[in-house]
Image 1 (spheres, helix red, strand yellow):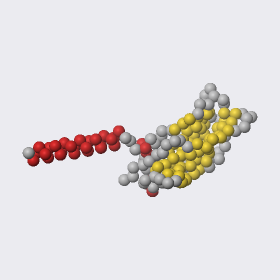
Image 2 (tube, helix red, strand yellow):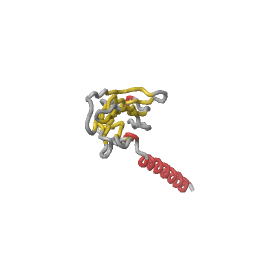
Image 3 (cartoon, helix red, strand yellow):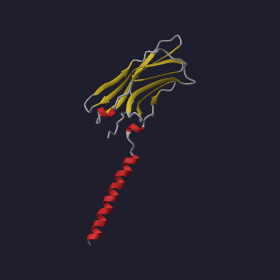
Image 4 (cartoon, rainbow, N blue to C red):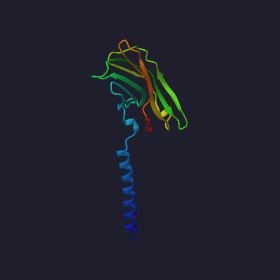
Length: 156
């Protein structure tokens, strides 16, 4: 009888460990989305992401704006990129980059310097940037935007 109980306990424990292991495998950390851009817009595509450098184990904010083919033929600029962190109560700016390199014919890319996300192990991170576009001879339109998602990091 004792051997069967151990067998049942061992099986239950093994199934529990397997289930937990499977959930970890099938639920990747947000940091694994190192180059997944969150984008919107049709004629002018605006994109942003929290970029994870897996070799250095750091985060930085990146943003890009692109005049899409077949659109309105806009010049574009992205600046005032911010890496934000949410500490459970409020959102704070960790890094920012003004990126004042002017207008670009097709695409502009900007980003902040890197931070170690494990400095704030229980926080989530977001990116925010100001996107600007204009037609030749027209007035500029701009929008400050951040994706409706956060990135987290599992620190050892």
